[in-house]
Length: 342
Figure 1: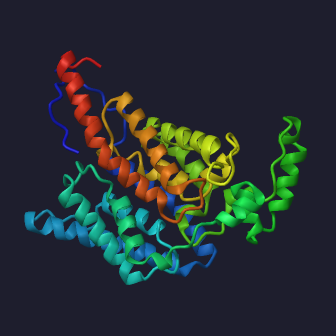
Figure 2: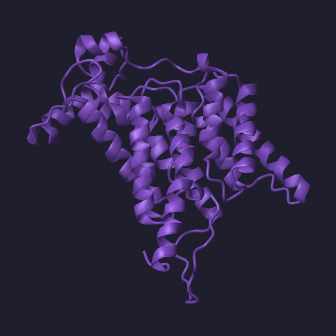
Figure 3: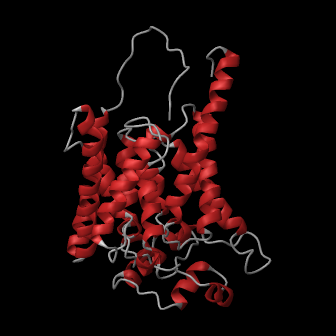
């Protein structure tokens, strides 16, 4: 996004956040345990796609840098972008196509949408959308079917009806939680959510390890690597929409949607903490960020519904990115009227 028209006072400034390079390094470091888990699960297809997507991202950066004679082959931002693209590709995705979509998506987003550091369309989300359009058969179908939903009445129940495979420790952990903390609060957690939290049965790495993604978000927030406003507004809006409206296509009931299922599927958490907070694509004011997060939540509900979508979160990011320049235009109009006052 083009950042122009804002007046900055001549007062001294204090650097309170890490540098861009350090931010990229920390964000990439939070992905290392995910890669280690993929290796422990012997998911070699996912690991190969991560490598190919990273090489494709580096090739895109190299092709943009050579004409200016400023080649940065091992730029951390570029490596991080490639890793994020690879995290959204299914294990069965063609490795050569993984290279191609990362190269094409990142090159397109950075060349057509503002350039390095000022692009208003997230390159990772663009690459993932291209991947889905290029080889939709490699992506898994929706986790729940309409018939299963109508039969059981909720998304998670429909998933279990379709022979959902739980991890061996799910029953033990769920029983311990129900007999301990949750039981004292009058809450009973059904079996299966622990599986979605720890090791969801998805061929897409970004959808699989939700527990670690939540821990990573704490690190990213505490070190001010990402801004909290957009993820918070996104998750709150999407969760409320799921709770209020997700049963309507199947029944006439409100207030019955499964928020936990929606958050633990479709890559919702990964998109919230790794794609949406990209600073180059965000509005600048807190109000603008909040509006962007709300729009992202609405887009996610319209595309992903109650959850279980294979690539809906990436399309939701692209949609809100396309609207963020409008938000910034309104921000500029506001600042022009108020003389730079928030």
